[in-house]
Length: 227
Image 1 (spheres, rainbow, N blue to C red):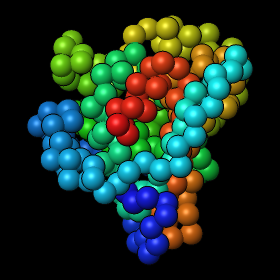
Image 2: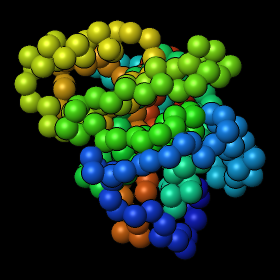
Image 3: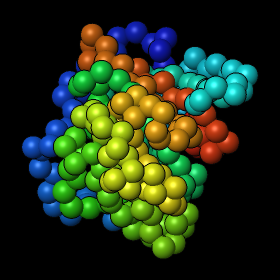
C-alpha cells in the first residue's frame, strides 16, 4: 500500500471478482489466523500510512460516518495485507461490515483474503446465488470458541419476504461477524453496519479503499487497521 500522494504506482490487481463458479479448494495455507501476516505487516507499517483522514460529527441518520480514512492498494498483496490487518482486530467478534463498489471492484476478493487471514480453510464460495454462506474461523485469543462468520451477497435479493423466511434477521442478531456485499439491495431491512469499505478501481488497476466507521465497534476496527 502506498500513500495517495506517491506517483508511479504499479498495476497489480486483476479486475474480476470471485463468482459462484470459482473453486477455492484445499486446506488453508496459513498455520493460524493472522499469525502469518505479522512479519509482513510489520515490514510495511512504516511505509504505508493511511491518508486523507476526515472526522465527521456523529449524525442520527442511518450508518452515519463517525470517521473515515482512504488508502491506495497498488497490488493484490497490498489488499491481502489490509485484510490481514483487519483480521487481527478483536472488534470483529461481533461486527457487521459492508462492502461497496462496482462489479469487479474486488469486494469478494477482499472477503476471501479476510476469511483466509482468519484461518478459514477449504473452499470459499461466493454467495451470489445462495445469498449467504456460513463459515467458522478457528479459535483465537479474541474468540477462544471460534468465530461464526456469515458472508452475504444481496446482489440478486429482491423479495423482502425472504428476509424473514430465510432467517436473516436472526443471523444478524446472533453473535459473530457479518460481511455484506451489495447492502443497498437490503436497505431498510438489515441493521446499520459498524464498518464499511468502499473499493474503487483505478485506471492503472490499483484500488482506492475508503474505510468508514459507523459505531464505536467500527472506530476500534479503524484504529486497529491504521493505528
